[in-house]
Figure (spheres, rainbow, N blue to C red):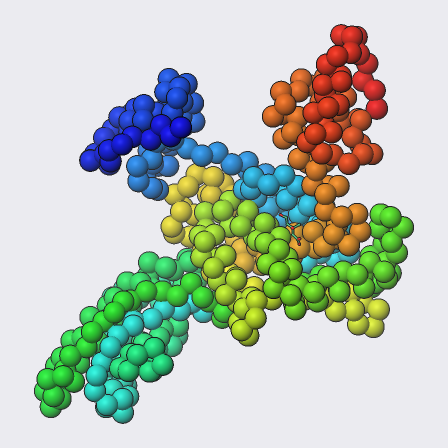
Length: 452
Ligand code: MEV
């Protein structure tokens, strides 16, 4: 039976934090006191820190904790990184670490940034003849650049700024629909605010210039700005991460699989993901297990990164796996190009205390370095997933890690945990299997010895 209130609440956002919790626990929970205690138990003990966290959002009542782990020994372009990862899925960090170790012994990851261009558009309607607008555009562009100069001055000092402005016509959307499409370099900042500010300035100038064309008709002097907003699709903010080694240096694998068989199965698994959207989605999900974890740990926008990555995966009209693999002249090559719009200054990177520490842990990288790190971790994650899939199957490693969650949920003591871990070291872990074994242990005499 639902405990939800029959009436909506007015003025919720005006309530104090305790007032908000009180209303919630009294209206939605069966045991208000316990839930109140639980929610407040996750408040930060340092009031100032809590204020910082509350400032990131609205109507905050508590904090939602996620594990903060690290993958050490990630060798990228000859440099070792200890990479912070925020993720709740057991085995992701272990898999990234294992793949990093595997490639550390084979030269590590090579990564390079291919481009740093970010984009945005002013979307508008204008009903005059297209040639007239095109003829006006050089003067319009000058005026837009002049008016936005004040917003761009700092970025230009840092080496970034506007690198392209063009008029796009898209009559297929609607007759008279156009875009002012801009390319920007935003150096070490993700740049969303700056791009949006510049676009809004452009939109104002567009309106002013068009309405000021004295020799145009009344209709031609009218422009309707629909919206001004950055695009999270940044295919030219691109990084490549790759690994390679002679096939025979891949070593041997569980279940008696030799290096060549492994390489061929692995390459086929990558090809399947390139061709089949069902497999591609899961394949890319595995890549984003790693990418999102680092993006979150460094205070970047994982929704933007995900949206862009999936759009890029479908750039030729079919959704495909993001990574590629080739065996050539007995050398195994595995790589991935991925667009990543990341920042290492500004936004949450400077405000969230753990994001700041993550960046410090990574040696305070530039945005380009962070792109290389994140792409390499994504590739490592993909390698680890495919390695398991084409050898042992994913469940063996996954359920070993998940065993800890199962044991915790069943309230196992430390002593019982050791016993269960020993028992399942060579067996398939299932929730029911663990529960039954634990129940059996609990029927044994107190002197029950740890039995493998
Ligand atoms: C699980 O979170 C991710 C995998 O399913 C990825 C894959 O299948 O490639 C293991």
